[in-house]
Image (tube, rainbow, N blue to C red):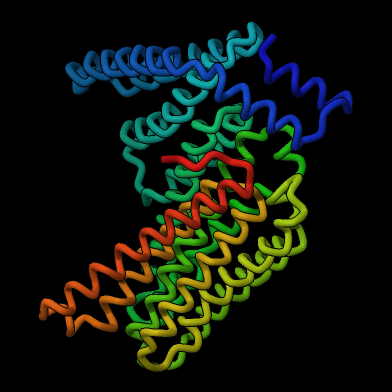
Length: 383
């Protein structure tokens, strides 16, 4: 029986907490992740798929529609049976590989059915059907890779559907405002999933994957929103933008209440996490709602404040990687601020020398502080 099954049994018996189970799985992943098996298995599966595609494609026009669907059903049944067999025998890597294949195969089958019966419809509708049909299947997986593929599929479905919704409203600022207002919801929804105790208990790797996508997406979108202050919209924001901001505020409120679930086992990081969540909301929508004239310095300060809060979370949670990324982003932003403010001096040798000294000094300061933080957190800094 695989370690994943044993950990699940221990959790059901109340012998392990969700945090301990996640830590054990993370340790086992580092020690014995079967990279070679995944690579060889993936290459073999891809070769088989390409061979089947080549055979079918070379005779595509001569194959009746009913035969195409029968072959599709036969292949789907074979992969499904293989998934059940791998589950029973405890082959974790093989089960994850087969589920991934079936996940993609369902989308291909939808395309085949549409081609055979000459069905119309938009791409987002096919993706929505795909996401709905594979929901139960993908929740049977346990690997971070499968979780990441699923999250990417869900994001693609959402954004294509949002694009269709915006296009349906016709040209004008209202449709554009709706799209801008709703574009930041998927990262927040990912964080909602990551904050679920049930997901953390039964699918700890899924929980971490949703957390990574949620934090990354939320920080990137909030960072991008700060640049609106360089070129603010010409008039008052349309009301549909307020709708998106309201939904985002409601989701953020839930996350603020459940902040402890986002940093399990790190009570010192709860307050910084709440501050970061509020900054993501305020800085993500504030420039869109309130900006009326160019504010370059304010844009830079908003950006730096956002990533300073992210660095604070990394420091409080003893996550050196997050701390390093956040401080590096702040350093790069400070350099760009310098070039924005003193750009006119760069035409002279004095300006170039000053800019070089500033960059070197900032880099040295960052490297030194990074080591100090790592030492304080009892972590060895990466070279």
